[in-house]
Length: 88
Image (cartoon, rainbow, N blue to C red; front, side, top):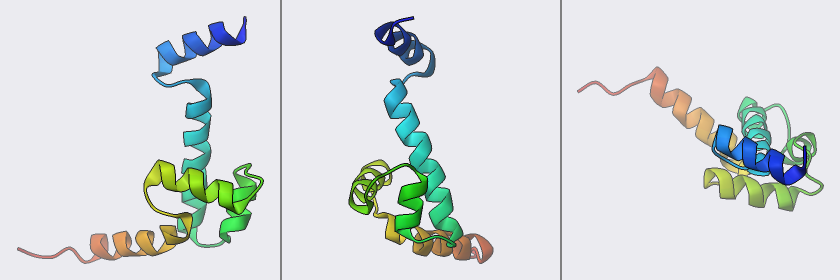
């Protein structure tokens, strides 16, 4: 099967082109690693297949709307809110 035929069929089936799908998946895995708080941003960037922290940060921010360095802080804030919901 040709690349263009594969891309057309994949897009029709999944709803996004293959490269965009793979990029989202890699960044979602990276976000999970960052929220866990055990790895530095550069380590996560390398694990996700990015050659530089800058390229990873740009892609991450484009996908999620915030830089990767804020992931742990946001995860902690979300956990705090879910553990202590305000009563009305």
